Length: 142
Length: 144
Image 1 (cartoon, each protein chain N blue to C red):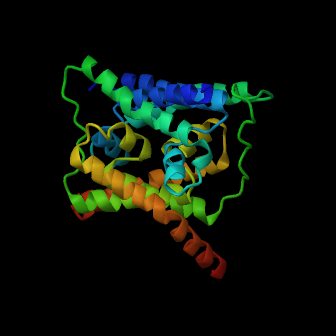
Image 2: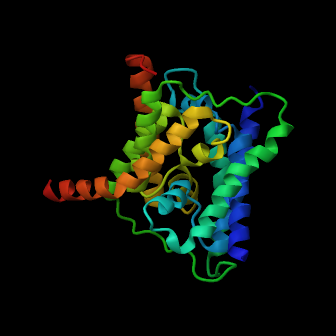
């Protein structure tokens, strides 16, 4: 659709405002994998409620916005279970080993001109593009 | 309490932003990565739109303290270690395969069907395994 990029920019702006609130308010970096991961491996026990409140907002806000859209929202997630499981495992392991994902390294890292954030972003985009090219166009598996 | 409310506000902005930008739609994310297919530039606009307020936020943070007290996160050491590279490559592979990264996976959990729940379970499982795999990688890196 022609308006997709406008909504991308608007939505991106909201994401950045969220990051700004988390940083200037709580003094923390808004990274989805870090906030989630700290709950899983126990490293986030000291600020458990801060993490849960954040995740609650992330889950609930789309539900509140949902009625404003009169079209059915489809995530187009693949129905191949093996792809979903392998992808989920890779995302979970990878983001924790790299200590960040699209929000932490991408949004928060690049905006402070962090070399680590920029390098991580380059590598996960290249790996994602190459994986998709191989699995979709070369092997036709996804 | 203030910390919890600010957290809720940040999470709501983040979740709302992911929703309206279309980033919980895996075709838009895979569309950005798919340079050999029907390329979709939306993700670049989302990233750009998110980075702009954050550039200002980092500027404002200079020489100040967070609202709730404490200190701002220190800049990370500039060194690029094997964990950053290997982890990002593994993450990117999963991201390309399914078109989901952690933020959108959480934001879409109520409307992503059974597949979304399975992805979440697998991702959390991966996060639980990460310390073990990370330690393995460290030993491997030492040996090389």
